[in-house]
Length: 159
Image (tube, rainbow, N blue to C red; front, side, top):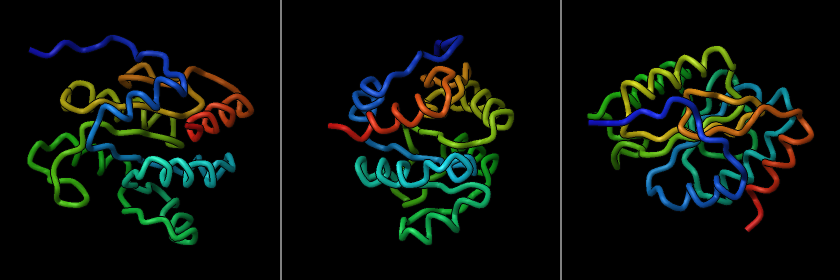
């Protein structure tokens, strides 16, 4: 029997780094707010630093392609549905992911997607590195302003 955490653990950059090292199949899902908040370059550096496979949602695929970052284009709800399917072999055909990191997605949509993953895919841990707290994630950054959010993202890049 699975036990389900009621609220997300508050995440710090140091905790993010240690959690990421524990999982062998991470996936980063990037939403359109990475463009609006001018954090695209930081996200690309995080992707390269941690060698993360990327799903680009909404209109972000074009921006990743322009920066020569390999990404797969899916809708947010579409990728969440695939993650719930235990038979899905992942973007690379090597198996299901055990950690999914979300950044820059629409709050209301991601909140519901995380609820779905929490209840129907308990084998996957979810982390949000957005500027808003998501109680349905396994771990989430706290609510913060843009300045503090950028500082947290820069700390993720430090060794």
